[in-house]
Length: 296
Image (cartoon, rainbow, N blue to C red; front, side, top):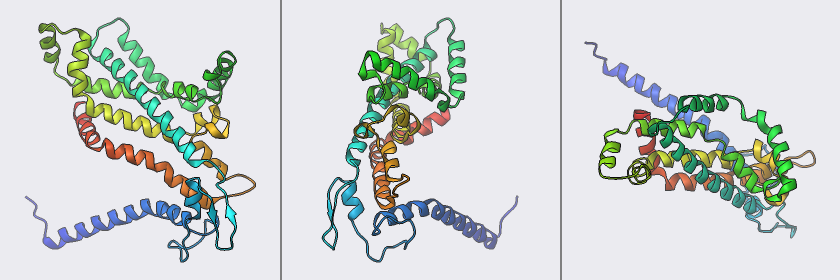
């Protein structure tokens, strides 16, 4: 039996703590820089980490309020940041709910219902997910551009079209939930069948309550992915009023002007919906991630 000396143990503890502090500082420093830029005067990336003369100008503009400078100049908000945030939250919630509904029903079918070709379908879904999603951008644009001629609701510059695209990203979540359902004792199915429950009643009354933690994980991960999405939203959304915050933020940085301060304030606001959703679902996330790691 090897017994470490107290001196060696203290040294390892100090080294571990030092590494964690350095790692934490490396993660938080970029965020601290963004916060600092949002409180500086002007739109510059170079300056003090702690501004000597902080201003709320960029935050007023981000919230859609005009700002009066000390010299009397009235600055109007350049872009509708709150509208973009609402578009992001609306699309994210609808798409995440749709993704969750499709994923949990499909996962239950693949886990508990026997039908011909089940393995082939699962393997095909997995292989399709292996290809980069950007390969489909041109095809998706052509498809929805053609559909827009039939119905503008399904065409380019429509939130409905963007939600439909997001609903296709369910393969990973199907596999995640299927692994969780596979870990549930089959005796529950047999007991429910003996009591006269139909497959739908078994799914609704037994499996859904048990899968709430994993469903919370799927919802939050989907919501984060959809709110932060840029490639698909930038291709399918064109008008300024329909943009999401991820797409609209690029307008702050163009070849004619670089509004770094306004961009920093908008970037921080973009994390607000994700933070709120995470805090609401926090207790389910911890349980879902821990149970998924054991049962998956």
